[in-house]
Image (cartoon, rainbow, N blue to C red; front, top):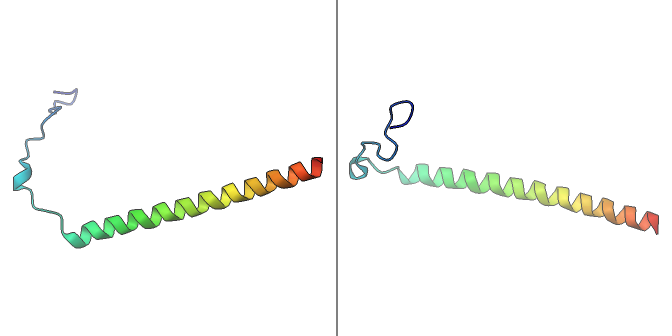
Length: 63
């Protein structure tokens, strides 16, 4: 048991008795994850591109 009196390893729930998550909900969560990941990567790549362009301009100005 942990400090709150809850079991550490077992939840007391039998996995075979828990109903499955509907496929539409699973697909919606997956789609949301993909959309947010792609948005993050697009923003990240834009920031990287801008910083590399700034660095290139800075190097050319010093030459």
